[in-house]
Image 1 (spheres, rainbow, N blue to C red):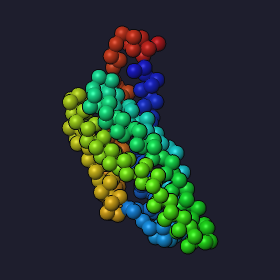
Image 2: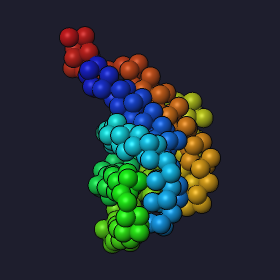
Image 3: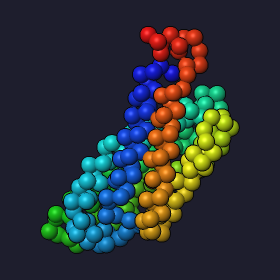
Length: 220
């Protein structure tokens, strides 16, 4: 992989990981909230919801980050690593419209005087079939894909074991936080994501080119 692509990957990993962690910390939303609870919470913490909405955009770098992590796990030659990358990348991309739409709707609800009407709209949004179709596979495949990715990374024997374990553990904690509403689990999970992604970024930049053609691109 050319050096310029590695730098793009490193930036995606660091910025994307930081955005995901910061977004979870600042967002007033937690778990599976009803429309009424969500509107009340966002109205009370409208500024925080604005920051969470703004962080949606740098957090989208997580999509490309999954591909670069897959590269480190040898996705080009490993069926396990390529499958894990697909499980992480595709559901994440498909879930973006539903997730970002809910964030935008929540932010608007914080300043809308008709709280009851906004609560019904949020409930309708969250109860819609397409929202469930995009969110449920994302949560499930995020866990499965990360565990498969951790196994693939373990097989490469190029990263510390704690990084491999954290790669499989962070989505379990994130999903547990979503289901239980216990925010500390999510904070720990996304903190592990950020730390491991920084390690991935460092390894990506330090990675040597694997062929004479790539060596030429690196030194060009």
